[in-house]
Length: 312
Image 1 (tube, rainbow, N blue to C red):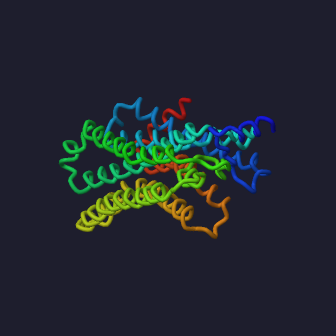
Image 2: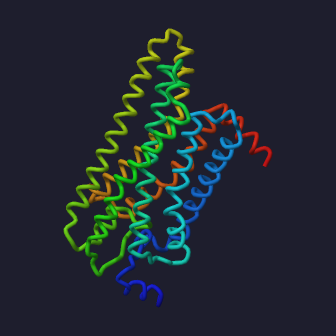
Image 3: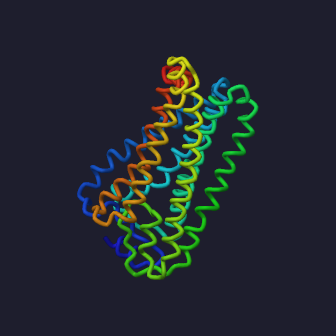
């Protein structure tokens, strides 16, 4: 308790409260938290290892899967260790600098994840609608350039969030009712004018999601049009099956992301515990399921992963 009081009196420290109202259940809540994290970490590391070892998998589709796996490792890693420290040891203090750093990497990696999904939709579009030029359009160098563009976009778009907050005065009440330094949760700690912060965060949410979802929708509308021109129903199913995994992963990412962000801003009647749990599950469940979905739906990857799993 002495440590907690000392931390609370320090003006350079925030207090992450975990899940207020469910403090007695923190230890129990930590069990699925840690399980989801470990399963996701093992699955994504296994995917990276398999693609790295198998020369036949050094193709644009699998390189994009590796980028997706890296974002799936990074996103929960920025949150789960600190959350478990709160749940297990009551270590709730985090410096303002550490909080803003966590916020930047958390949102930047999330934006990078979205860019990878857009690139994967483009990959499926070229593979189905222009297969003869696939190897010339989507080279490994081309994929690297697209990924780099997504990384630069993520940094440029997210960097203003912590920079704007670093200029804000913070109130004496530095308790953040959350397990992580989510942007909107930290904004509420400020005593200054936060209209610019809230507006930029909301505009960024809609612009990025609208742009990315529009590009994905355009890719799939062209894919569906190309598939409908194929006379054979068997060919229909075979062609669309190559997109199934990507569609599942995309829905798992965008649906809870939009729901969590919108309810946090506009769902005033929803209990705070629901907001926090939704935000945490959004960071934990997709990274855990993504390698499983691609392992099940992609035969070539499934066979290679199975070989190394059996060896181990």
